[in-house]
Amino acid sequence: MGYRIIISDDEKNVLRLIERLGHWKELDIEIVDCCQDGKTALESILRNKPDLVVSDIKMPVYDGIALIEKVKEQGLDTLFILVSGYRHFEYARNAIQLGVMDYLLKPIDEQQLNETLYKVCRKIDNLRENREKVQAYDIQTKQDMMKQFWEVLIRADEIEGAEYLKTEQDCNRVYGTEFNKPCYQVLSMATSLNAMLEHQNSLFSDKVRSFVNVCFAGSATVYYHTTYRGHIIILNFEKDRNADIKDAISVFFCNVRDLRNIYGDFRLNIGCSEVHYDIGTLRDAFIEANAAEWGRLVFLGNSIVEYRQVRYLSGFAQEELISEEEMKQLQECIKFIKQEEASRLFEKIYKRAAALNNANPQDMRRQYWIITWKLLELFEGLPEYTSMEERFYYAYLEAKNFQDIFKNIYLQIENYILSENEKLEEQHGKVLKIAVSYMKEHYMQAISQEDVAQAANVSSGYLSKLFKKELDIGFSEYLTQIRLDEAMHLLAETNLSIKDITQKVGYPNEKYFFKLFKKNTGIRPTDYRKLYG
Image (cartoon, rainbow, N blue to C red; front, side, top):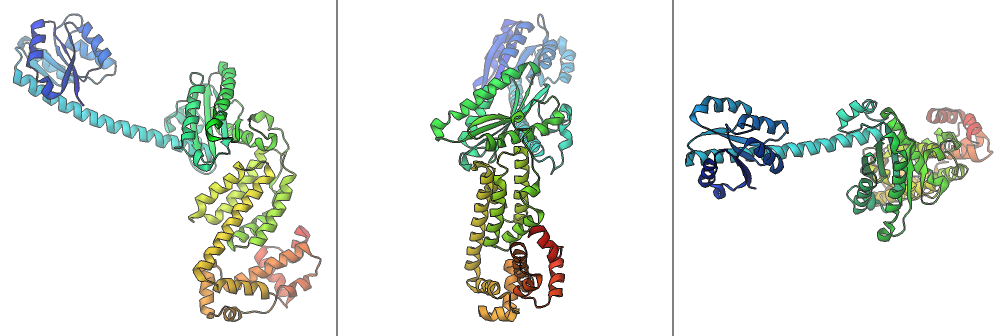
């Protein structure tokens, strides 16, 4: 990359001499202008932004020193070489303190001129390299700050940093944002497009981003974020732009909807928060936008839903959907790969969810997250964690109503259990399958580890290690879990006496069964029946 220079001297013969003596082509320097006074030189410098200026110290209007000061006031990093007669020698030496690269004495010497030019060109190279590094660092720093901003906004209850969202000054300082207007509104947009199209680097997201920039240009400061969950847009605007923002949201919705010409038919919904007048409530606006977007489960169709449309719908508590005990059972079903039991539990949840299809979307979203995060705890630290997290969210994106979400979640759980069963068979053949099958068929009898090992045609020690390695549980504990699971089922679904249930699940001693049941569940069999029978 070459260099651009402006030469300024009130003596024409000096200008021509410098033009003739410089090795411009060899040094890859382009002379973009020649000026004969400080005012013209300043205008040319501001217009052309050269890398270097060779200027006489004494000129009309602005002398060399004043010219440097004026250029610095404009924030330019142009380098200067000053030209001086002997009588200005001390004057030139003082100019070095202003950042002047060097000075040349008249009459101009060809060798000295070109050596100085070469030295300045190397200085420009260093400045460019450092500038590129700084710019790259600034860009990366800005990206890191914005990434942290979105993480804090989305997960304020889980990570540190939410305190910096309380004031514009703190937010701008810590996260590099530029909030400076009184009104805040958050939009949450979700589509039914394939997951690949929802990711940050997709062409679809690029189009959405361009629509955001065009639709809200001039009316709001905009921040945009996208993941597989959808798109979040923060608008910061003046109070008198409320109507403009509302119109811009409608135009934005129509522009995205028109992408059906490219991607085919897809569902599109945008949730809009209330307008907030304090950055300290930005997190509340984010929650409102998400709740409004979930309002599509109530209002159906492709639309823009405002938070005010859903905020007064009837809420509900977690117990109306799933009890704590059932949640534990569901976790155990996944942990112990029990498909039938999981199916029974999800059937109950599915039926209860039907009565909540027109409930408050904010509660729908809250209970959905409670359930899915409880299930995801089982995958913590495992390779499946990220994929299961995404699959659970697609269970929402692909659902038509609240009830439909849990059918979709169950399908993901079912697929996981089937996959794990396949792995189990591949890794250990039929051994563990035979052992577990034998235990489930004979748990009502007084079977021992030796009995099961013999049925699977392996040693008792091998079977014990297999249980520990593959199921992360001892043989006796697994057998106990099978018996207690069946006991809980009989307690809840039948009118059999506790004594009969005790014998049916393989415990001849009723007192021992009571003690074991309470130890493992925290309550007595009679209390369990009262709660779930």
